Length: 106
Image 1 (tube, helix red, strand yellow):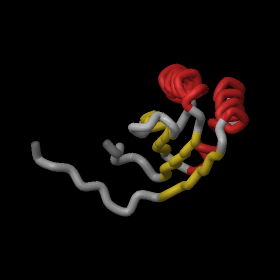
Image 2 (cartoon, rainbow, N blue to C red):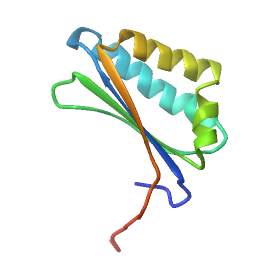
Image 3 (cartoon, helix red, strand yellow):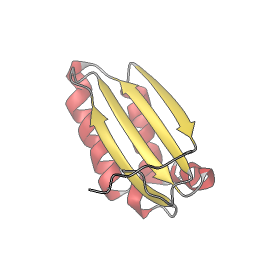
Image 4 (cartoon, rainbow, N blue to C red):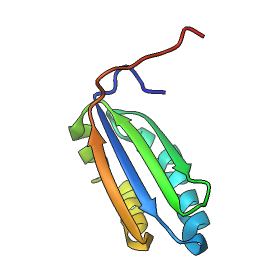
């Protein structure tokens, strides 16, 4: 769910091999759970995998682009991102600004 305070969203997609999927997915999840929430300006995040377990998708929501940029300078987060980039077959990072947030009444 998108936090209504969110002003900046980063989407990172890492294509990995079946051999290193489990380790990379676990490392990404641990970093998301333990390190990313300590960064000022972080709203919410999710780590996902595709059905074939060859891609790891990380979506993070921030109060600003500056907060997202600052997160990459945090030592544990920077090291985790560097490991993902190094061990992935390919990666892509896209950034977005939310235009509309729609919620159901349920």
